[in-house]
Image (cartoon, rainbow, N blue to C red; front, side, top):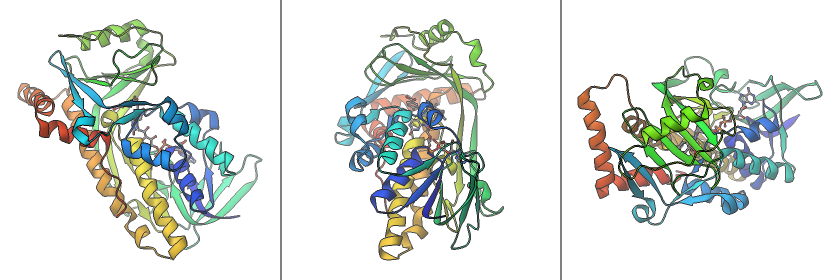
Length: 395
Ligand code: RFL
Ligand code: PHB
């Protein structure tokens, strides 16, 4: 079998790449380890940057997001017992973010691909990639009927997340990894409870960070800073809500309306990690397969979207004009944006969480930083510009 671009992974990166290439008349095959149901129900990101929203709408994937997504023009940073609103619209010339679940985007993308005759094969457990440093890279796997398959590609896109096979198929010594791990996690709850506020609230409290987000006007998504080895089963709904109330104490303390969990609580590890370069031979890595940010800045899926926008354009330029310049610069172009998002996510994580090894001096600095960000025009402008998303660059 032959296909122009073989894509490993049907997360936001792989699906959007397949969609964008299809619009440029380029044929793809997407291979995914998990089932369609699993991919469509994995609760992860919730915040879509202005630029990602624009890409989804321009490429014809935004209809349901436009109807059901909630547009927010600000967030609150809460510390010292008070909330401080950052007004994105005023600070960024009218930009905002859209709150719309990643699994809804994934559903929309899968539906669009299949409606257009796109090929996605789910539940493929044994993808392997070969000859990536040649002009005829290959993907081998066993299809659903149990038949071994070999697909010869012009290019392979590794969109298979942190635990995927693609990055691990690059010979040792080629990649350099930069990493920072945090000694805490986020305990997440999805609850049938109306959000306490129209916008997200990020909380710095001596008992630990909290984030009040949402999925709709009826469903809240809330996170509490927790230990890395926290056992979610030890958290009843009541215990979770009580702890949240403690972290919201103070003047004008929001009083969330409680509701039952809609699914098991989960613990997310916090990590900053970049593997460079994002390309080896005819293998191009995108999204979580090549960089991870802690979720505090809400950047992971947005970076995945930005990567594949550049990659789709570079591959299209190869087929239409026979040029490889953009492909050759893919990694450099993406990494500039990746590192700025790494910086912002690390900075927000550092500013908002309790660290077990910080001195009283550093704790005061953290509060001074929050005070600066919320009271100075320059401070809040920089926060707002990064949160709504830096411009997508193609050169
Ligand atoms: P994904 O979504 O992990 O998709 C990779 C796909 O590859 C498949 N796969 C394989 N397929 C075939 N063969 C193999 N060997 C394979 N190995 C893996 C996997 O099954 C999967 O379907 O990566 P992608 O597409 O790069 O997308 C990245 C985003 O999913 C991720 O960055 C975000 O979820 C991060 N994130 C957030 N990002 C935002 O932009 N805004 C947010 O508000 C936000 N909040 C979050 C988040 C991530 C979180 N968690 C759980 C880590 C909140 C949380 C709690
Ligand atoms: C979410 O709604 O899941 C969410 C929102 C903002 C973040 C991270 C996660 O920074």
